[in-house]
Length: 331
Image (cartoon, rainbow, N blue to C red; front, side, top):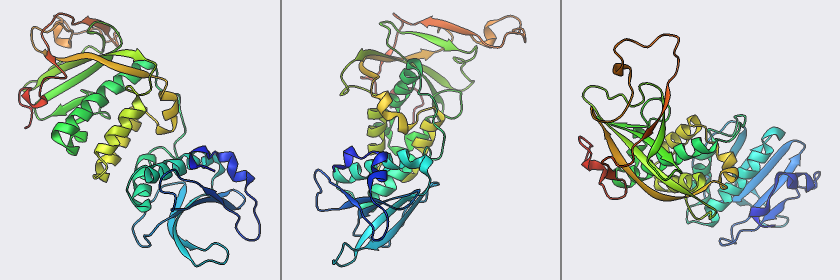
């Protein structure tokens, strides 16, 4: 059976008792590296992945046992494997996806099996033991896509430390670095027209410069275009040599409500980039802030939400401007 066809129910079809009966998963390219799945006893599900490494450090994650083990096929010598074991039926579907993710990383690249295990677990560790929730709505999907498009550009121009510029978990500006702040807005409208949430979302702190990055997209039916899973995968690849940054990236994704277990659902939301630009927020920029009113707002007013149309205002083209040309941006 090809590894891509593995489903959780397959574990229940494998005989138990006596000697271990395992089902081999076939790879497409690196076919000489065997992978087996089996269930040695009730409610325990295992996968062994061929590995030349026997002492390399393997990751820890709640809900899974991961370790080096030696096994032999009947009549053959012992061979080294990495054992993945799940002892919770409630995690079996996620465990199946982890197996397929590890094998896919290995089959489609040049990393060792241990490196693939470490890389995949770095992504999954924030999600595996958490309950699943509803996927993001399209407005939220577009917002996150906009932030990831900028993050990808920052990583390309400024390196992996740019992950720290993304303030996904702080609820204020989307990006902040030194004395520059960027609020990202994304839309499928034809105009640079966006909803502003909160009276002070566009407030500029003393000593800082602030920009609104407006990104416009067009809905598409082609999955080769921009999707959340494709952006997540590209950024993960950009960060692959920096495991601490990968961990930070997925922690921030979790805070923003994205769960990699739902990646297939998000593939239906495909977009093509249309145009975008940076609008500098200064005293002439159209906005509402708490300082816009002669008297403080009533305490009975808990939230202000308004629509801002920026079409026709001066902007810096997102695809042409060098990010460090923004005032005070670190070179």
